[in-house]
Image 1 (tube, chains in turn cyan, red):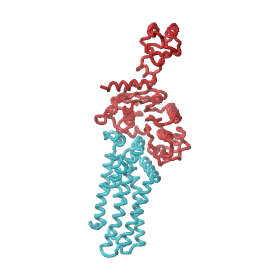
Image 2 (cartoon, one colour):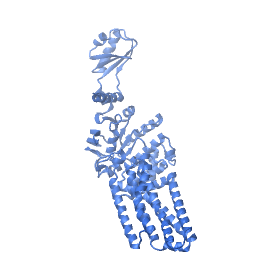
Image 3 (cartoon, helix red, strand yellow):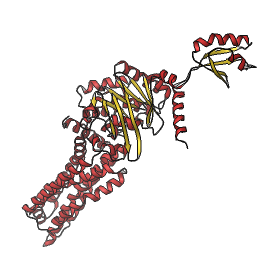
Image 4 (spheres, rainbow over the protein chains, first blue to last red):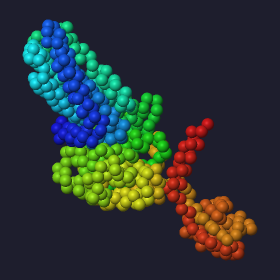
Length: 248
Length: 308
């Protein structure tokens, strides 16, 4: 039986329906934009318009934006498998013809798509507020250099990394809360590089930004392969490591 | 379904060992055993959730192998003891999700028929979280019927249900049997197995017994006659000893039980002997051993065998 997008769609559709009725997810999705628009916007509007301080303020503000694709998907994806196991819904799903690749991609998309929508929406709102209320020097500093490119490029890549870390943790943990904390922790390392770029510790050219993005993309693909290899139906159902034969 | 010498070990622990049996098309096969006997692990293994340690099996006509996992799972359905529904989704939304996972066509029609089979058409829009345990169990059954499975695995389908809901589930299983669905029924309710199953297997890590419930009784218990009298006999040994074919007898709280080779042959002579002894006969009939007696006898044997 070949890979089926119908099965991916069935899980994805179910997840999105479930999110809409899950207060925890709604609260996370609502609080994140509010928090991540308010703080950088205040910082930007109140910023000094002279010297290095402008670049630093802009970099710091934009760093906030990139925390969204790290925190949000790691919290959601850490729930994806462990939450189903906790509710007792995992076994019925695994007894259907769904393949592990279909299951994992569906779970990943269910965390990835809302994250991308929220992160880009927040960035758009931030740019609009900056254009309306910030000093022209600050606005031109936002568009100068590679800030916007970094935002557009690294948002999905950071989210991808966070999603796979979250799912990896989720397949191995039995405690959803502990899994979410571990997942956020595991998703953070790439953010250090982004922070160094945003704070101008590393001077980023367009070429370097693209190279770093390609490296992160490679890590994302490796993470996907690792998570697929870790996916073990037997372990998920019984808690015991299975022979490879039950994996598909 | 053909299972040959199937075993599953978790390290040193043996979940089930050297299990072999066959289940025919349209048969309702009962799988009984005490807690920890390996029933659920066997079902999970046949459902391709767990890899066997050794042995082989054919499920729904397909050899059990990792490559065939998705193909087997598309031809079977499993309902675990807890139905595992998405509680924030409605009944229909739950079924739609699984219809997608099975890549079914005519989703609306299939959902309608599955809900009709469990009499839940009018609850399709209700959130599963708002349903009682019995109704959730029925939704779980509807979900298991969506893909018209060749083999349906039911793990304790009436666990926690009230008598009315239990009767409805029994009626549903009976109607599925009429439709030719092979049903693999794991249950603790022995009267349920006796009533619904064509054959039963009793598992206690190894397969202890397999057959029709009436065959199991014959295999395990000698035939006997129960005699109830208004008052105990003064000299039972003289009365029973005079009747040919009575091999031995014992007094019970309600009368006497006599081991015999053929109750039909012995009963008339026994009745005459009792009348001759001035006994007032209340009843005289062949002893009936329930499946529960068979089950307890086997489990007790295992406990005795394990004790030092």
